[in-house]
Length: 447
Image (spheres, rainbow, N blue to C red):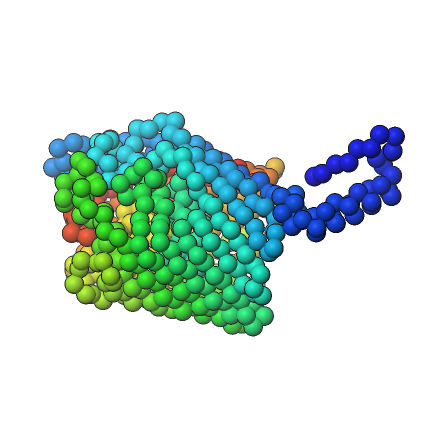
C-alpha cells in the first residue's frame, strides 16, 4: 500500500486520509499501468512431501525391485497484477528440489531402474506466464503458458497431485451467455509442459491441440458437449538414449493423437436431508493425424452417484475405458491420479481396456481443536478388462486431511493387490501388474 508522510501534519487527520485516497485513486485512473501495479497480488504455493512405494517385482525379474523413498520440496512463486485496459499479467516459477532421491523419477531415463517410479524429478522452470483480457462482455481471453482444467479433468487437466504440474502454451477463450447458464470454452494449444520437466526426453509435447467444451446449466444439472483433438508431433526413438525400442516406442506421443467427442451430465439434488450428486458421461475416440495406428473406435462410459447426510458421504460408480485388443482408450492430458485408484496402475489404458467399479465413503468434521476441518475418506476399486474378462485386481485407498489457516496436512495410502501377476499390454509394451503399496505424508502452504 502506498503511504504519504508530510512533516508537521498529523497522519490521523480524517481530511488528509480522504485527500490522500482521492489523489491515489485519480493517479491510478490517470495511468492504468500504475493502477495495475499497485494491485499486484503475490502467489505462493509451498509443498513438502514424502512418498514411499513398495512394489513386488515381476516374476523372473533379473533385478528385484526395492522400496522407493522420495522426499521433495516444491515452491511455486509468482505474482498477478491488477488490470490495465482490462488486461492482467500473471507470472510464476516452479522449483522442485529432491531431498531424498532413492526413486526412479522418469521412465524415459535409463537410470535408477532398480527403483519404482515416483514421477517427481527436480525441476526449475517457468510454470505460468499469461495475460488475461476481459474487454469483450462476458468473455475471458487468456494467452500464454497457463493452467487448464476442464470439467473433472478426465480428458484435460494440470496433474496437480504431482510436484511439477502440467501447463499449456495456449490461447483460451471462455464466453458466458444467458445469465451465465451457457458457457462456450474453446482452446488452441501448441505445447504441453509435462510433469517430467523440460530436461526430460518426454518433458514437452508439441503439436496442434484443440479443446471445445460447450455447457448449459439446467435446474437439475449441467449438460456438456465436448470435442478434443490431439495431434502430437512424433518423438523419434533417438530422443530416448539408452532405451530399447520396445521401451521407447510407447513413449512416442504420436501414438495418442486422437479425436475424442462426447457428452457429460452432472448435477445435484436435495432430497429431504440428503444431497444427491450424480454424473454420467459418454465419449467416443478414434485415431487422428500423426497416430501411426490403423483406425479404431473405443468408447468411454462413466456413471457415478453419491449421497451426503450431514458430515457423511457414501457413493459409488463405474468407469469404463474400452480397448479393441490393439489400442486402449487414451487420455494422455488427464489428471490421471484422480481416477482408477491412487497407486496409478492404469496411467495408460491396457489394450484390452479397463473397467473400474468403485465405492467411496467420507466423513468430515469442522472446528476440531485448532483445525478448521478434518476429513477422512476411504475407497475401494475392482478392476477388470473390458475385453476377454481378465481380472486386473483390486485396490484400497484411504486419506486423512486437516486444514489450519493456510496450511493443509495430508496422510494418504494406497494398496493395490492381485491374486497372481497379470500381463497387461499398453501401446505394444507389456507391463506386468504386481502388488504395490504407496504412502504419502504432505504439508502444503497456499497463499
